[in-house]
Length: 261
Image 1 (cartoon, rainbow, N blue to C red):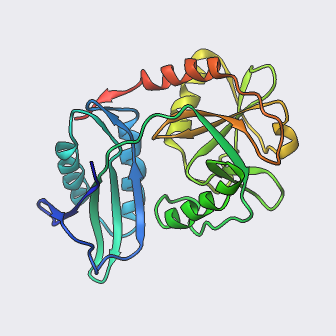
Image 2: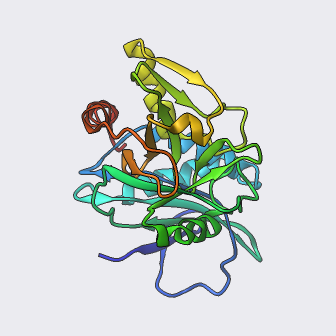
């Protein structure tokens, strides 16, 4: 199955059957995994998307109408990874929906340190997606499947297409990148930290260096795969890859799913 692209006219979603020459940069993007008509934290994805879209002059009524049509269009059978977008065009911001089949679930990842930070809008998902994909590809020669962005001070910020959570030796806490660090406000991280709070597991905001990673576990979070365990770091620290812990928390994350409206 291939991707289908739709544009919102203000009243309906119309299929785009060709590459639109009027397309410009992606101003905002949001995506989430759908399995058999169910998704995790859909309301949070909606809020993050709409909060960013409003900054580009789109009003709530327009966004509500667009969202409702997208919800009605997403297939209720199979595995999907839909994406909603605000695109820049000569006529102003345009709302689009991409119907995309989801790839197979992954439970592991190999991470590598990126050579630079290409982000221009670290708090908004969308404008930097192409640059971040290029960043991920730049570390593929090491065997890595995800690139980690570091601050000028040498601390982990986030993955190219993911959020990073550390589990220090002992596994008694989840260590997240401080929320004051410019990065995408992760929906998956929010769900995981909610689960931790309900379970009485400490969530600590802390800056983490490569030395801090030695012997620790790293979780690579995304709405597509949930939790992946980093099982390798070429040229980096030795990581602890506790798959049993990952599987337990992955199950708890997926248990929060709800039917699409």
